[in-house]
Length: 218
Image 1: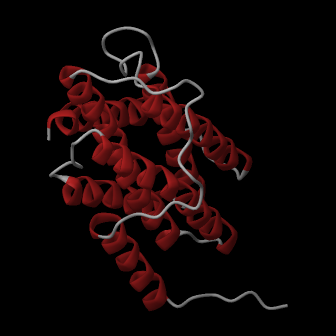
Image 2: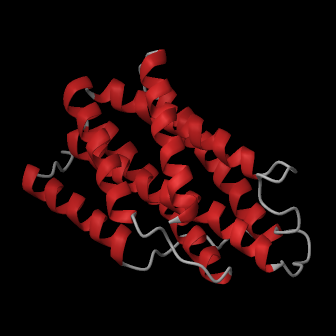
């Protein structure tokens, strides 16, 4: 059987469609949002604001994931790798929907700078794909998922920087997201991801720090 290959124009239109749906359409999850095992309790106004700030950061992370995967799919040399990036993006759409829904429940909103975050992540994906090829793109995916997984873990700690201890709804979502990110990272490693340099990893970490600091407030 001959595998269907899309033209460059089709791929570009697909990327544009992903951008518009990510930034302006209501995201729809294929899976229902994780249900906490513990009965929900009332959050104070301060707890809601803090939880909303953290979930807004997570929502921005999912916007960036859609952008990164879209750019990597656009530049992938291998049809197999292109399909892997597209499948990962589809699965991460659940996270985008869950975090958007939780923000609404907390009486808050997504980041006002979402188009900027999307553009930056898409540009990074394009550079990785054009200059480094599929193995470097997969390496970026692995490092991104590693850093995101660590970031989500920090939200589940018991200190003041994490989610409120009694915000069981947000914690259930973050825990499932963390598990999914780890799975995507392993997928990329198994597909032949290249190991990025320490300098590149450090630069990605610094960029993520800027994003999380700004998105928490805006």
